[in-house]
Amino acid sequence: MTQKKMAIIATKGTLDWAYPPLILSSTAAALGYEVQVFCTFYGLSLLRKDLSGIRISPLANPAMPMPVPMPVLVQVLPGMEAMATMMMKNKMKAKGVASLDELRSLCLEADVKFIACQMTVDLFEFKPEEFIDGIEFGGATTFLDFAGSADIQLYI
Amino acid sequence: MNFDKELDARGLNCPLPIIKTKKALNDLSSGQVLRVTSTDAGSVKDMEAFAKQTGNELLSSTEEGGDYVFLIRKK
Image (tube, rainbow over all chains, first blue to last red; front, side, top):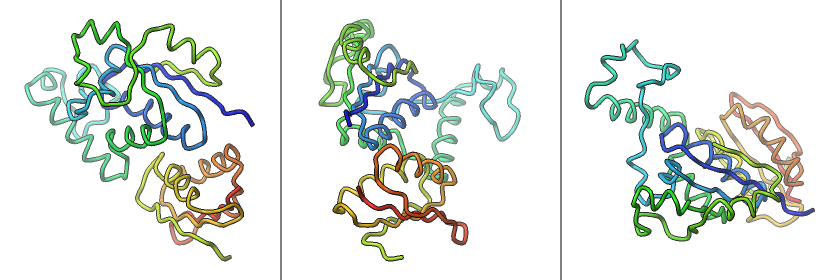
């Protein structure tokens, strides 16, 4: 049986959006897939050494369940985003959901290849040392080279 | 039924039960049986899919006192 392949483009950098690429990659790797994740724009957040800055905001996110109804004018107050993030992380921990760090470690351990989009790294003036070791830097062609022969291609 | 190794994945949520199952199977040799206990309701379907995708055989999938119990024979 030839090895299956999965290619993902990760473009988002909020707590909720950071999960799908990492969950799918770690699981696919466990199923024996070869996986590449191309991180561009805010998806670069997934590759930074420190993941603690990844947050979730209730603002402009009406589907987010809140313990009490919260008017938009309250959501914009300083500290609301930090509070929402803390509540979400606590909830996740209580439900046995892995942390982003844990999932990313599982991915790296299983040889998931992460590629940082060089153009957006330059755009945001990130330094290579802000990212974890073992990643590659490349462009659209690098992604397409792998994605063209992948069984699953996802844009997240 | 007898098993060669046991994995307690209770309290863990998707995708951890599957990933830990995969890791536990790495320590077994072909034909040996792993018993997995989980509290994640999603793992019932996931374990079937895992077996189908990886070729490891899901011998049984049962519910015992709120836990989901799986027996998997390594390919």
